[in-house]
Length: 228
Image (cartoon, rainbow, N blue to C red; front, top):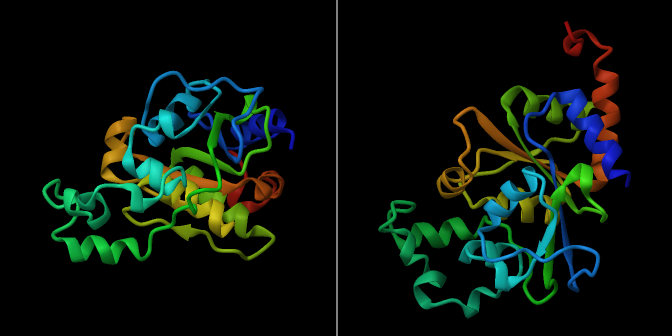
């Protein structure tokens, strides 16, 4: 994949204010990418990459329990009982009670633990690896155009993500389903990432990116998408 060229084309076509982020899961720690310094939450790793950093992280660099679990770096059974039950989320106001947490988790996506040891992050334009997922923080108009471009030649519908952590909805879900996924993030990630009220999130399986960019370019010649 020509990450530099595709990243520039995506920025030019959509006039993105935030750099798209390339994400890749790796069974081994890479030798050609620097390891993240210190710990951070999965969602903050996305912010670092949007601001130009390229790095990889292991479980040691993951600060958030959700980031470790949903990204496949740690087995849920290794967490304390109050995390496994979801009891810790009730006083925070995320759920009314433990049954609600458990029901919600039936519909959450996570990557099976024990497979990957590292996750790579980079601005798409600087990625020196083949990404698995492209994460984009954009406005609603730009998100709508990505979804139209996805459907343009395929008729495919994107997946709408619910109020689950970004590491699940915007990373594990597109990875596991192979489908473009859009959503609003969750309250914790929006606060942690300092996201404005107008911004939404879209993640694209990397294999679909060249097709979507080609479709965006062709759509610009059509009535509804012509630039004024």
